[in-house]
Length: 530
Ligand code: NA7
Image 1 (cartoon, helix red, strand yellow):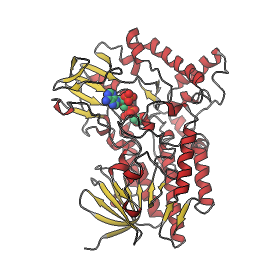
Image 2 (cartoon, helix red, strand yellow):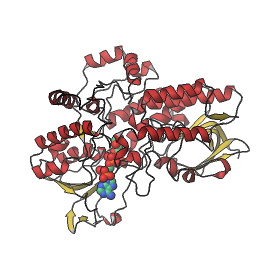
Image 3 (cartoon, protein in one colour):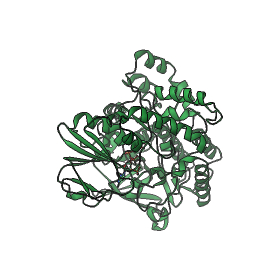
Image 4 (cartoon, helix red, strand yellow):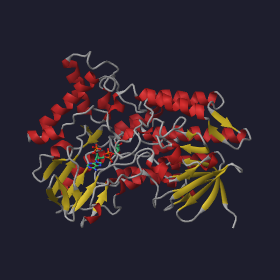
């Protein structure tokens, strides 16, 4: 049987893969999308844990490529819930008739570049083998679940859940006792909801995290009308901001402000809620002393909220605020005032083991019915390295990246011709509003494919020199901020043995956009087109 051939294979049918497919079709390229899940939505398909929501406001966390789409879709809350975002993803799939080119429940296992034909052979876990000129990964930055290697995990007799791969039918914790490992964003969102249902909840905390109340609320018709009347303007303002989010940013220095100015600013932003808190001053992520003023403010809020001073102290983060990704919550600190909610500090000594009935820490046994792992992801590189990519000379991506990921613009990899990585390491991705950043990547890639086709070329590949230059630039800007100083998933510190490299590009969306546009203007500078 002849092998099926496509212009492009896209891996993943989340927001990146869906838009990529739409764009490829628009430009007249044939495409096949492979998706592990049974449906579209990526992150929002898998992360169904209680309380899951986006921490970017819904009117901004949405596609802008089609004005009719953004005009017709009606977000109901300031921060959309996972079910609402998944409905939106399905609406997009229906609206553009995307499903007919997506193979669901199919994992890509291997992709090999053939230098004689300049094509990729893509293999799946269903035994399919197809040939494509281009391969585009759209697997998300936080999609490879991190299950910690705690001894005895398999011995636990009750159900074990991971927030990043939550049962589709949901979980009812009513009348149950629950243990949660982790206090990252997923834990901080789910703990208050689990505590509402459960009879008992014990949270095992290794590192206390900063969180700012969401102040979530239903969106009024008036607000939605105002945004929709000037959607273009809002998107344009966002593109000028480092995080590609339209928010109020105060460039002034925190330490140069008076005590009173600082308090006023922090209080206002605390009341407003969410990530814009970090926009209170321009140097919060540049200067230790400035950052400390924001840390002290949040620690004060924790002391004001949590009744037991010992618990308040344990919940108080000691590190740089905003170094690990800032969390956004609804009622997180106050949950620890409930008598059935307990906090266990596992920072000094790791959890000894999971037992049949719970877990053991420092010789003490904790007993519960259900175990929730809110332990995060092998971020940015995990999903890419699960696929056996073989580029020129049969070289494997995992070997090329043994010392950390190397890309040109976060979009392409030297030695791997015709391979594109949407929101890959070395791009702003997770430091920005993912949806518009995805759109920028998809449009850049689609234009690039068109340029290759119009030149009558067959191959485009980043040069080693261009890649090296970009890797150095990504590293040097990372070194300028406090964000690279702590043990976060941005640097791979949550995965034992992972090379410590600050993976996303922290130079800001505007600088990145400018660079991507200049590369095109200069005839695909840094690429060899043959
Ligand atoms: P995160 O932010 O990586 O959080 C994972 C949490 O799990 C974090 O508190 C970890 O502690 C903890 N963890 C991981 N392994 C262990 C072990 N072995 N023992 C104890 N505690 C452990 O993942 P999330 O899913 O919450 O959020 C990911 C992103 O999704 C988030 O940043 C938003 O962008 C949305 P640690 O801090 O490593 O000490």
